[in-house]
Image (cartoon, rainbow, N blue to C red; front, top):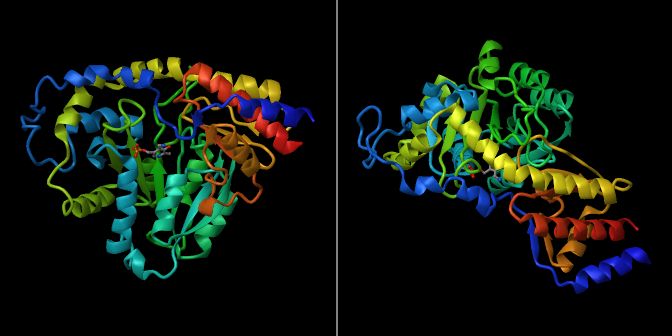
Length: 398
Ligand code: PMP
């Protein structure tokens, strides 16, 4: 059997390659190395000493820079530490233990609570729910975002449905961006829970790979327009703009949500790292500075997406389908017997994100999705890993 023979030859190569996590490559990180000598001053625009405690909301100059990029007015943004995931985690905890504006009770007292989870989705969102016993219900993705007929039905049917995870632009892992109609329906739909929250994780807001930029509708403005001003919590970070381990993160929302968030976090911290905030303002400067920086990222990342697309198109088009995103960090591959493919790849020294990770409880009912993260390896390693993946997929399908 050719497939078996090809696989045996692959194993005999003794590869050690990793396509698991969406990390920036060292070349991408080096784009921000000028930050090592910044900021040139620790004094903020308002005269504040950035080295000291204070300014829980974060520096206005940084909020003004990122407000338009995250579609949130600067006064409705809060700057956090390096991880937006940490903010999302803590926001869930605050909701559980303290309730949210508009809610009659704390979420821990609300009986069984449920989050809607578009699939394929981001495994670390699902882990947060799992950790706190929040039930997850999968919602299929369409080309324009989550299937809104399903979302509207579920959100309206049960007051225990309190939340929904959304990665609205260049979604992890499909690369899909939500259509204007999807965003409008999310903002305007009837929810049984008065304290329903959309966790709008705009992690890839500025991460375009081509000259054709996906743009999404303004969730905060639409929620306000439709009489649901407190419905969305917005999140973002510079993890994949500057340095994944040393960036800045953001929380955005309605004035009531921002006040609530600051009230919660004021018990956690006397103020964020403003030296890093100053460093980011000085390095990125303005929206044009961010755009130019992201073009430099794209010049490194785009050829990697092209390698994946080229190899899949040439070798796997008869058994698989996959996405060809215009931005973000991932490609979603749909292939028969995904678990088997990942096992075979592992045995051949190619690490892939576990099959099922794209679904709540790691249960992909059709065993089809594999998330490909092409950014970290060099082009040669990526090409080798993709060729190996093809061999594994062919054997699993045979
Ligand atoms: N959200 C999404 C959708 C992501 O893909 C990632 C990184 N993989 C994160 C959040 C993590 O963000 P941060 O580094 O700001 O915690």
